[in-house]
Length: 158
Image (cartoon, rainbow, N blue to C red; front, top):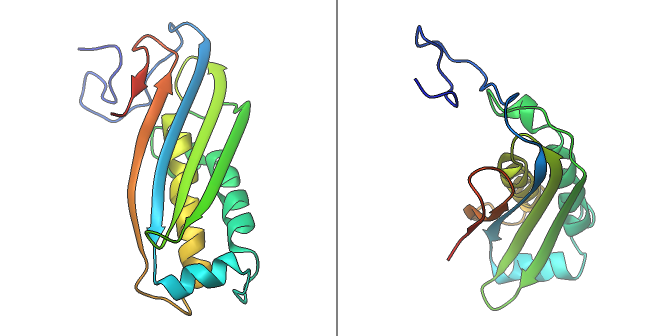
C-alpha cells in the first residue's frame, strides 16, 4: 500500500500522513471563467450591478474561501497560506470574467486545492451577484495551470 493514499489497510478513508515529507516552498495557480451576456459584463465593468462592486467582492470571497479549503474539501489538509491573490479581468471579446488565483505557502503539502477553491468561489460569487439579470451565465474551465514545490516537482499546463 502506498504511503500517500486516502485509504487505510481496511479500506477506510483517512487523511494522508504527510509528516515525513520535507517542507518546501509551494505555489499553485488556478484559472477559470464566468461566461455571460455582453450586457451583464458591461454592467460589471460599469459597476452598475445593484449588489455592489462584483469584482472586488468576488476577489475577497475567493481569498476568504482559499483559507477555508480544508473545511470544504474532505480529507484536505488545513495549511497556513502565506499569500493569496485572486485577479478578475473582464474580457469583452469573449464576454467573460477571467479569474486567476495564486496561493503560496511553505509546508509539506501543496496548495493546489486552495487555488482551485479560490477560483471556484470567486466564480460563484460573480454568478450570485449577477443572477438577477442573467441566469444563463456559465462557470467553466476551472483548472490548475501551475504548481511548484514538493517531491513531484513543477507542473505547467500547456
